[in-house]
Length: 143
Image (tube, rainbow, N blue to C red):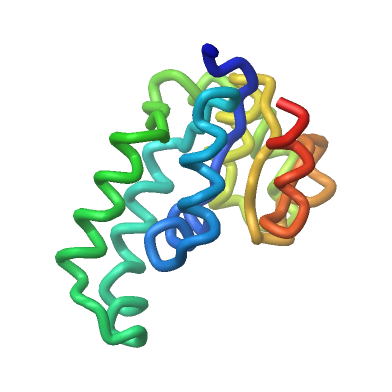
């Protein structure tokens, strides 16, 4: 079956996907019915946070970085800024009161007409459907 519904992942979901099992399992088990996307800046953000989280969890940051690349290769498409930047103004308006640095995630969601999967409360109320890890299974099951 071909993937049919898009879902935009925030950097915190990518990080949970490489440091834990539940998110990784959800991504793997639903990749046939859901297309997972993330803007390029979320990969950069995840890479910036890996060293500190890896040190805290006492795991090898090199291996975790490789895990991120493998996760993306297997089931997450990276959206280049050149594709979502046309939605920058609308995205900034929607997210500016909460965290203006998150505009690329909102812009990607607008580009793809897709909800966002995040643990960041700043997205709630931005006019784009938002799922957190406790509720995303409902979206995934209905895809």
